[in-house]
Image 1 (spheres, rainbow, N blue to C red):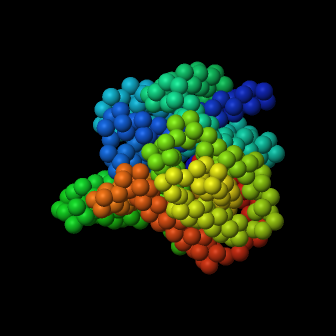
Image 2: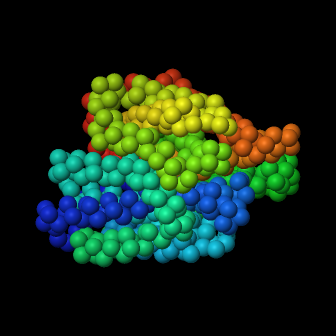
Image 3: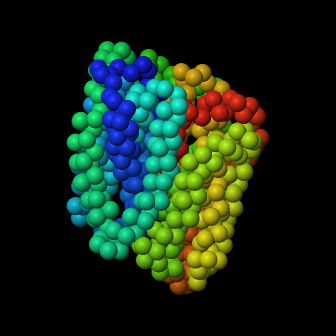
Length: 493
């Protein structure tokens, strides 16, 4: 999760060395809450579904409501912090996220939970965007900044492991409400410590304009598209509702492009997409994210609803993949990029991920962990860990240093939006396939498995297409340039 690279620090006083590192750990704790909520909910989905009576397709809104507002306002959150002060916006984001978490935990209806998740995503976007700016302002010396960014990257990658384990533990020991309520004490502590540790800054009042219209139109366009896709099976794909919603989404997307072409300070400068590396990285990111978010969502359902795993067992099943990804974030990915450049690790990682998804597409009704879960999880961990850093580097390889933060922020936004749309499409296809198999007389476990296998197969094709784009269209970049750019980015869960 990345925002624009901050300008010269605007703090009134510089914290002592010990205070700066303590501030880093507190900031990373705040970011950890955000990362947790991208994975912790997947383990609890079957419990939430049973308790609040979600359908399998409407269940995706618990994930997508968060991702859409997060992706839609990630870049805007960074711009707000530049204008009104990083510390002020970080505290606002933590407050919003914490209160929304409490609302999620106390939810007793579908509408309340989905609305609260959307607000969580808005708060999470602000926190994620501003945290990186604060860290870079606190650590201006290159060596210290590299160490600080290493801590930040490890939290982003390792948070996925903690999320699935904590989600499984809380859901099994207590209930699903506690996966959200656990954020309350953490949020209070982070807020109190940040008020003490973070230096105040004035921001750049009057230094620019906010592209609120761009953020609202692109998020609304994607929400309408997701809603149309999620409800397509029930309403009918040729129905007036589905066609009307998709048409409205297309109009809003066109309006967004028009706004970005004319506004003084665009949220997503379209001129950057004239650069091949940025265009390829963003398309590859959309395809890959569509596959990856569907993997988290659908594999959790497969393990619980077909294999009969408990929530804790599901959390433990994700552990190999998340530990491998965390290991790559601790420096293994950087060494691979230095040795082989950007293009080959990106393509190889995406192909490994595609192979892992293809293995899940072969999962049987009576599958077991060692033969049918662990191999796919291992390959997906290797693939994601290997490909993420090169993907972000590819998005920056043709831009100037002053634009590198913006370029990385754009590809991360595309990643979140691609994940939301891809999850909606694949979950809807899985549900349609399941309904067809139930109509043909298959038992529920076999019908569910058939739907999940179709989604995994299409996800594998998405990841393979992203790999093909990378190997064919990305220019080979020098290892030295990749290394020089690497400090400007950080990993996404």
